[in-house]
Image 1 (cartoon, protein in one colour):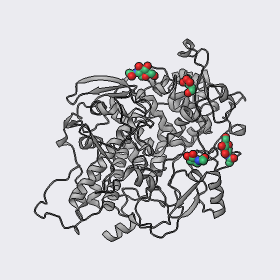
Image 2 (tube, rainbow, N blue to C red; image 1 turned 45 degrees about the horizontal axis):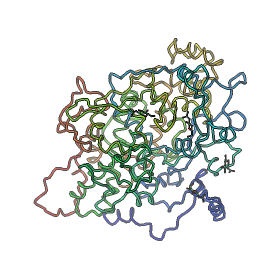
Image 3 (cartoon, rainbow, N blue to C red; image 1 turned 180 degrees about the horizontal axis):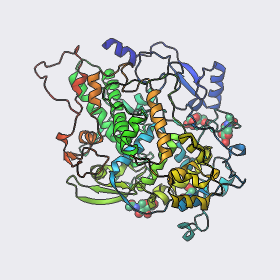
Image 4 (spheres, helix red, strand yellow; image 1 turned 120 degrees about the vertical axis):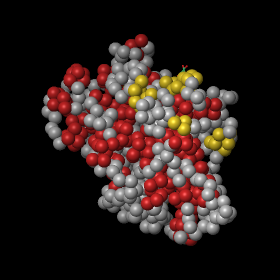
Length: 634
Ligand SMILES: *[C@@H]1O[C@H](CO)[C@@H](O)[C@H](O)[C@H]1NC(C)=O
Ligand SMILES: *[C@@H]1O[C@H](CO)[C@@H](O)[C@H](O)[C@H]1NC(C)=O
Ligand SMILES: *[C@@H]1O[C@H](CO)[C@@H](O)[C@H](O)[C@H]1NC(C)=O
Ligand SMILES: *[C@@H]1O[C@H](CO)[C@@H](O)[C@H](O)[C@H]1NC(C)=O
C-alpha cells in the first residue's frame, strides 16, 4: 500500500505532459502552443497536464477529475451558464424593452436597499466569515485588483476610451452623494477569455478566473503543484510552512515590506502572508479562515505522523489535505448551508444525505464546473454583511470595535488582535436577514482603497456585463411559471416591494436578476430568497455529482473507510475553533448561531472531536509500542 501511495503522489517520472486549450478542453498542436508562447498567453489559455491516472488522488491543479475531459476542473476553464446570455450589440448590457438603457444601478440600489444597522437575532459573524471563505475557493480577486491597481483611471478622462472600464454613474439626486461632488465609482469589465486573448473579441464574453472551479480549497493549497511546492509545503512531516510569533502559529510572511498589505500601519503592523496565490491577505473572513485552516492542516499532520510513524512526508501531507478538504466540505454542506437554506429542504432536494454512511451519486457526464450564476448569487450575502467588527476578550468582555472594510489587505492588524477577533466572531451577531444593508458595505466597501465604493451597485452592474437574461426568465427556470405582469411577482415578492419594482422598471422583463434576489421573500424553513435557493441548490448538487473525489464516495482513489467518514461527520465550526482558534476553550456547539437556549456555551471538552486513530495504518510499527494510548482528537 505504501509503495502505491508514494508512486501515485510523488512521481511524475518520465511521463510527457500534454497541452489543452483551457476554453475548449481539446488538446492542441505544437504550433498552437508556440503561438501562445509568442503572445504570452500560455498562462491563461493553455493547461499543461500530465496524463491522468485513474488511481491517483485529487490533483492540486484540479485536472483529471473527469477522466474523459482531463482539463475540466482546473483553473482558467469556462463556467457554465444556467440560461443563455442576453446582450445588446457588441456584447454591451441588454436594454430595456422599450429600447432605452436600463435604470442606473446606483439608483436601483438606493431605491431597493435602504442603509441602516440591524443586528440579527440568530446568526453569528463567524457564519459570514465562513461564507466568504467558501466563495474564495472558486473565485479569484483579480477583478477587484483590476480597477484599484491595473486600471485606476476608470472615473477619469482616460476611462472614457478604455473598453475595460465600466464606471458606475452616481445620479445628482443620490441620497448620499448629493452632498458630495462624487459622481462616479471605479469599476472594470469582468476579465474574460476574450480580454486575456484566448478567444476572439467578437464572441460572447466568457468569464475567466484563476481559482479551480471545484470545492478543493485551492485558496489554501494553491491551484498548481508548482505553487504548492514553492510556497506551501515544508517538505517535512507533512507540514505546511509556518512561523511562530507571539506564541501563535501563522502562515509564512514576507520578510520585506514589498507586499500587497497596503493598509498595514507601519512600522508597527508588519505581518503580510507570503501566500497571495492562496487567497492570503484579502478580505478579513478569508484571511481568518485561511489562518485557521493552515493551522488545522499542521495539527492533523502532526497527529497522523505520531499515529503512523512509518508514513513519509508525502503521504502525511496528501492524506492530511484530503481530511482537511473533507472537514471544510462537511461544515459547508452539513452545517452552514442548512442554516441558510433549511436542512429539510436540502435533504428533500438530494443535496444532503440523510444518513451518515457513504453516498455515491457521481455522474461522469456532468463536468466539474461552476455555473456563472452561482458565485454571483452568493454575492447576495453582501446584504447580511455586518460592517462593525466587535472584539472580545477570552472571558467574553467587549473590548473595542473596528470597521471590517478597513481590514482588507491589512493582515498586520491581526498580529495583536487575532485573539480578540476570534472571540468576537462567535459572539457578535451578523447583520439581520432583511432588506436593510450596512452603510459601510454600501458606501465604502473597499475602505481606504477607494473614496467611495458601493458593492451592491457593482454587483448589479456586473449582472448586466455577465449578460444574465431578465429575472423573470430565472423565475420561469426555477418554478416553471410564466410571469407576465408585475403582480405575478406576488408569489415571491411582498406587495410593498412589488410597488418599488413598478416605480423603477418600466416593464417586468427589464428587471435584473440581482434586483430580484434583493427583493424576494425567503423560502420556507430557510433564510434565503427563492431564486437564490434555486441557483445554489443546482450548484451544490452539481459539485457533488461532478466531483470524482467527493469525500462521501466509497469508490474513489484513497477513499475514506466508513470509520473515517464517521469521524469526518463530527466536524463542526465550533470544534475547528476549539482546535485552532486562539485560546478558545469555551464555545456554543452551533457556532454559526449565537449562543442561547439549547446552544449554550460549553467547554471544548464537551464538543464532538474527530478521532484520528481512525487513520491508523496497521502496517506501521509504532515507535514505542508501550505508548499506544495517547489520544489524537482534533
Ligand atoms: C506574460 O503574462 C504573464 C501572466 O499574465 C504576466 O505576468 C507577464 O507580465 C507577461 N509578460 C510579458 C512580457 O508581457
Ligand atoms: C480583445 O481585446 C482586448 C482589449 O480589450 C485585448 O487585450 C485582447 O488581446 C483582444 N483579444 C484578441 C483575441 O484579439
Ligand atoms: C477606516 O478608514 C477610513 C478611511 O477610509 C478612516 O477615515 C476611518 O477612520 C477608518 N476607521 C477605522 C475605525 O479605522
Ligand atoms: C477612482 O480611482 C481613482 C484613482 O485611483 C481615485 O483617485 C478616485 O478617488 C476613485 N474614485 C472613487 C469614487 O473612489
